[in-house]
Image 1 (cartoon, rainbow, N blue to C red):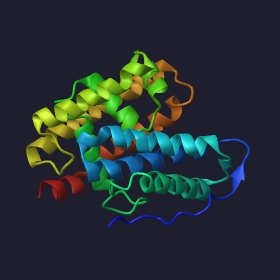
Image 2 (cartoon, rainbow, N blue to C red):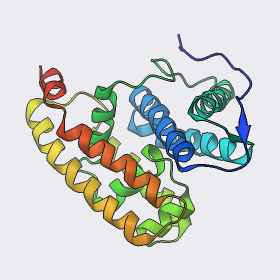
Image 3 (cartoon, rainbow, N blue to C red):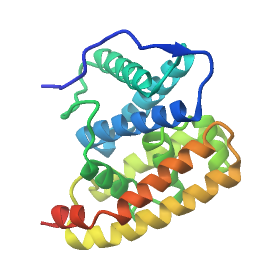
Image 4 (cartoon, rainbow, N blue to C red):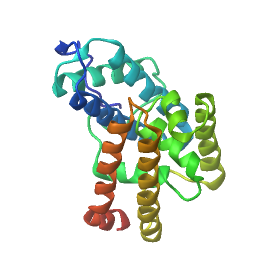
Length: 226
């Protein structure tokens, strides 16, 4: 049975978006995407991207939430709306909760060595960072319409190599942490150089949070490897 936050009206609004509101929107959308990715698996990336795009676009198209609590309320409201319209999809855990382990597992999967670097970057941008196809294309240096086909390559490789969003074994974990760190650092550099005005500052903040997460997960690594 899906655990969700009840549909409630959005909270207080303001006229301008602050950096704090934008980063919180991206952080929450990332958590929700991770929850859906962990539940559905990598073969359902198209739905996960649709989910993230819907939340981002709906929150941005309406009145600007006045504070972090309001953006959380509105983000969860639109997440529940999307799920209500896709009643064949379910999330195993509450929408507003993503464990640190879930983030680590999702990052290790999305930066797996079986995914070519550009494919991996497209997956991270579109599904975990909730960056639009247009902005992702500018980061990757390709037309926006070429971004989601890269994501579909990830889906095909996921199926071909039997990859899954799961707890890795000890050897996979050691290799995965190194690969994930390198991929994330490289992606942060690409984002900064692309000068994507809307995404660059916020996406790089999240990437730095993820790198810190990876570096500070010795306890989690022992748990995952147990």
